[in-house]
Length: 139
Image (cartoon, rainbow, N blue to C red; front, side, top):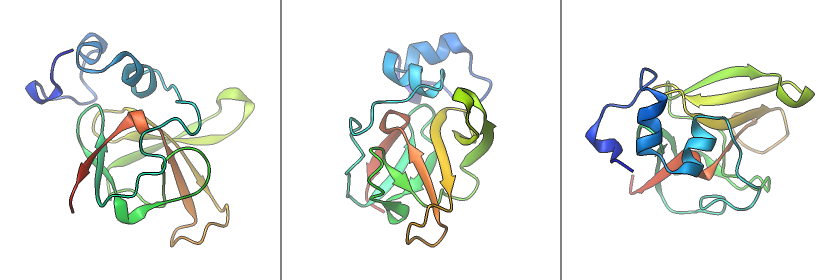
C-alpha cells in the first residue's frame, strides 16, 4: 500500500490508484459503498477531542464537538464541517436514504437521517463508517 500523503487524492483519482493507497476494507467501504458491521468500528464509542478526516484523502469532515452517542452501532455526528460532505439520494435496497460522501474525493461515508428526535441542534444523524474516517487528536 502506498502512502496517500505522496499523491493528491480527489474525485479524479483512478480506481487503480485508490487500490494502491487504501486497505482492502477501506476500498470496499469508501469506493464500493460498503458498510462495516454495526458495533464493529473503531470510532463507534470514541470520545477524544479532535477531527475526523476522510480515510481516503484526509479532508477534515467532522469534529468531536458534533459527535454523539446515537446507539445505532456506528459513529454518529449531527453536523459536518461546512462544505466537507456531499449528499445524494440512495434508493438501494428498496428504501430511500441520503448517502453522504466526501466532497473532495467522493468517498462513501455512510448515510444521513433526519427528524429522528435526537436532542441535537440539527436533529440529524450522520451515520458514518469508522473505516471511512481517520481520527486526529487535538482541536
